[in-house]
Length: 301
Image 1: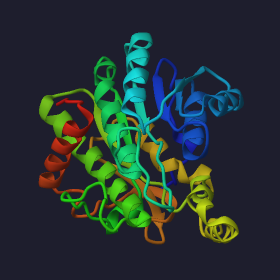
Image 2: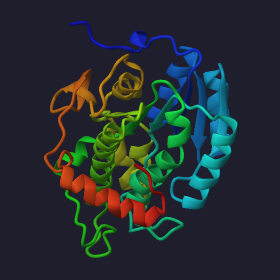
Image 3: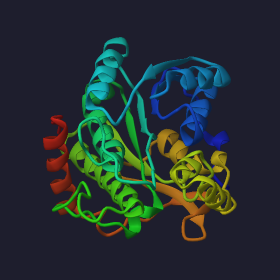
């Protein structure tokens, strides 16, 4: 079977796509490929200057809008303005994420930074944009998972990691939560008879600017560790293929999960990835959904 590449992306003219974290890394590649195929792409970014530079590099029909997923006020303001200007949205790629291996930090709303950004910000954004998504004939939401979700566990008694904080497990927990959200969203969309489809993807081990940033608190040693880690990763253009396939493959079923095929899902051609047992558990999904609704104040489905 021929390996899936960006050349398999069908024509995207007439579609409006929103890509979070689109000014660098996986988001930049995803936005660029969608625009190259004719989509109108909204670059949802925290740093609008970097977003404008990315838009110039991408070309095509692009626009830049400010979005800070670590602030629910920012999420609400972004969603309100976007829905007013784009009452029909065909694709939402929840690509943005944070990984910081230093001391525990919190969002503007007091949530642990990884969980607050990687889950709660995206949960709120998706819910607030569900109206414009449902107005499209075949809209799609792509949630970006990670292989770290496979070894993570959600401790509902200390979801914000206030006790014994460790950054790497906190990141893994947030990506498990993101994965649970994508799967549970699919269940709820199907149950509601919604035309919107929820799919998931993960990039394996991919070379992005998140790795250097994660180690920046360690100074020179951190830079050495980050450089060594980059040697084990695949290029960002390849790492973006699972989410591009999830975003564009015609007729993809809800709940499908794409990732690399080689070396324990760390690299290689795009294939169907495997969910952890906890990520696929409907009871976990229902419990996390209830928590996310309570914490964000966003209710849907």
